[in-house]
Length: 268
Image (cartoon, rainbow, N blue to C red):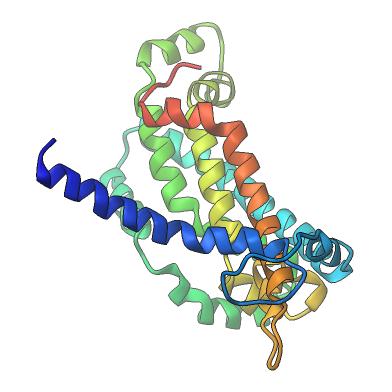
């Protein structure tokens, strides 16, 4: 084995260890009976940090609100992305390319710079301090990337399949429901995971657009652990582990579809 290869493996192994240290601390600290910021092995393990978190109504409610807002925004993004993706993929019309390039530009646009004018707009309407307002804003944030990826997936579906559906009497809507969406399901699974993870971890949108504490999702409520004088690190670690579970579960159930999407397949 060449010296350069050995050196590369050593460097990558060291980086991997440094990368794992925070996760090791998180796991150990979540079962620790004391609040210790350092990476120390506790004398005994306990489930009390998890018990304290799961019996706290505020924290449990934040989990519910986080799921409600994240899943709602994910559903909204995909619902409004399917139609434009199909039109851009199958129809030819004036200004099609400029619009496509505009959507591509929006995928990299710093949309959070719109939060302040959006906040002013929400204040003047009934959308401020409402779950629907947060779901609507989060859903719009993911629309450009969803439209672009779905459009590229629809492009891979042969025209002959669509023509066969039209010959059988299917309308454009039925063609989308019974042909395009089933064949593009792998990319839909990827988008569900992508959108949910982005929405689940979004801090600024609900933090700015919600003022009632009972509406705050878990991504904002976790900030409450950092008090002015004391931080319950073991409960913070336990809450952080609970925070990661929905995304991990969603990834496990959608893994096979992600592999199909990343490999470029369209057949279910």
